[in-house]
Length: 107
Length: 124
Image (cartoon, rainbow over all chains, first blue to last red; front, side, top):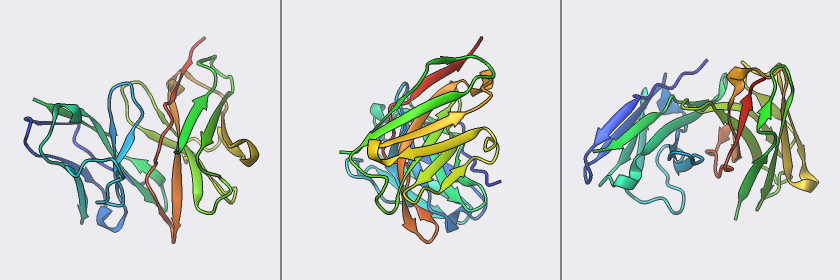
């Protein structure tokens, strides 16, 4: 089965840049989607197809994907960005797969 | 505006069958490329994909749970139903439904949007 590996936690000071990684075997050949989930709320899609943003998502959210690592980058981090973030791909043998999630803490 | 809403029992007993309904608006499951999926999240844990049904009534299930899951749709009512048999306390989770689109050539969009989720507790 296909496995996505995320760091359990990332901490960043306000105004700085946060980078959350998602590791998977040859993940660069797949489309990666990223979700933000705040406590008690449903996940929200913040980046799709590696680097595109749905309407209403700030430009501060961006994504990249190459080799064995995809990265969600949040620029000029705000207190309101504190949340859990999940990566997700579709794999022909495993169907839809989520990473274990990363808790972003804004210091 | 696309919306989805989950409904079902908040509490089920071990060994019982869970039936959840996803009622959606703003799109039709008879439109080519449209799909609805179920995803769950145990308290404090990660998201887990469960099942998907597409516009053509094709169905896909999590390998680890496929013997217990059934997904179906009622296009006229804009509803998707998930049943899970032989419930166990480890199945305690918030269950979400979400829309997803098929682009073609084995490529899918992300899950967007999601319903608010419904918490199901399995306990005697």
